[in-house]
Length: 85
Image (cartoon, rainbow, N blue to C red; front, side):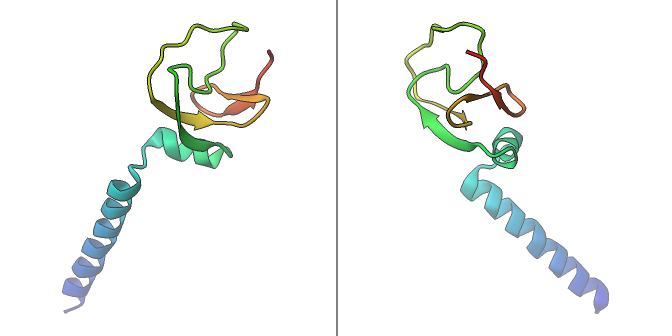
């Protein structure tokens, strides 16, 4: 009886997390973006909010999702850092 309840509770937990993943499509990069204070959003170019050493980077025109770190910060692939440009 107790083993059955544990199996049912475990199955419910797995279903809840699977549903959340499916609904929000949480990827490790999205989760990391939210943890460091960024917002995952859609950009109109391929540069997204990526850190670059170029003042005027060349970006492709494509709808691309990425981490928006806000003004004066950029996404280095792991966290939001101060943009030195």
